Length: 422
Ligand SMILES: Nc1ncnc2c1ncn2[C@@H]1O[C@H](COP(=O)(O)OP(=O)(O)OP(=O)(O)O)[C@@H](O)[C@H]1O
Ligand SMILES: [Mg+2]
Image 1 (tube, protein in one colour):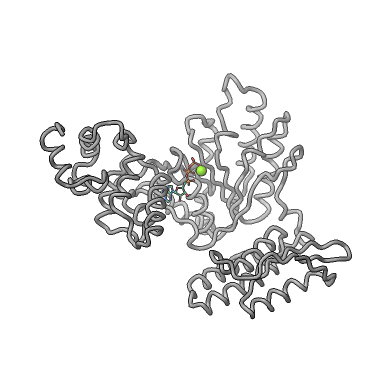
Image 2 (cartoon, rainbow, N blue to C red; image 1 turned 90 degrees about the vertical axis):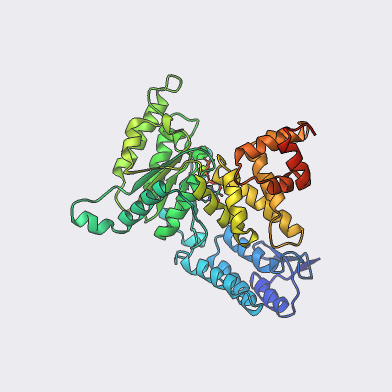
């Protein structure tokens, strides 16, 4: 269906209101040329899986066109609908997100040069992505040591003026390092959220230019952009730009990049919060390493941190006993793997119309990641059971093993008691 209205953008809003009142949904794609406006109506009933698809599409459309007014208007419309349907919690959350956004108008014509993200002059790709992390959107679960470092960092940054007045001001910079999947990026998001500042994430792919000299230029442009307003500058995958200068294979350009990085870090004022994250801390140039006032090592979670991660990701879908058992079996898993286990188990529960994850299924998912050979059906069951039990004898009782391996309790006890002759 194509409706050539020729009356400009207002028609969409009017149709939205009209069809909103009549509980119908029209997806309108507006293609405006200088003199005409075409509205494509692609659906005329409420989408079964996404009942508010109309508003969602309008908000996305407003976002990609940097049209703040449209984002606001349709978010408010969505919040009102959710409220009317009894979901005032989501409605409040939506309103908080909108209220927490910066108050400036983001329509392209009104963006000042300082608001536009810098781009690589060759590829024209943006050197950073910007995000505003709404309250509650990012949450990290950390062990005692990293948690106290992060809390101190936040306290120092929030009291920067007081510390400076007493002559003990601090460069607000933190280096986050550790193996993949342990929450480094999530911690960057969490810090920005806690400080209520926009997060500017440097894009390594566009920062590193294949053209001689351009990487240093890009770094300068990014740091200058970050210094132009309060924000958290987050250099993720930091080793790509901060590698040791005596690397035999990459001399010359790399040296210039590191020198430029050091100069940029030194030139930052205390209003720009600098975060950097890497999996390869041993590759970092020592001078770069020293520039960071705070360093936090995120390792694979210990038993109590695993239990907190499991509780967070499983919520009401699992009992405390199951969480404790899973935490013991999940030794060595990263936070990202624990999240993967929990989301898989929750999806299976939801599809089975249950509000609790299945214990056997959840333990199987953990075992598959912790020790894939225990789930290898080509190996004798007795061997797999023994191997699994040895991983966490307290948590993997005969009963839980029976559920995880989907066999009877009697069979498990026979196989484990008599040394596996069955
Ligand atoms: N300590 C943690 N607290 C909360 N969530 C975590 C934690 N560790 C991992 N996660 C979850 O795992 C996912 C991956 O984490 P994240 O991207 O922060 O890891 P990373 O350390 O940055 O990994 P990489 O080195 O691969 O970039 C996130 O979506 C996050 O939800
Ligand atoms: Mg990361």
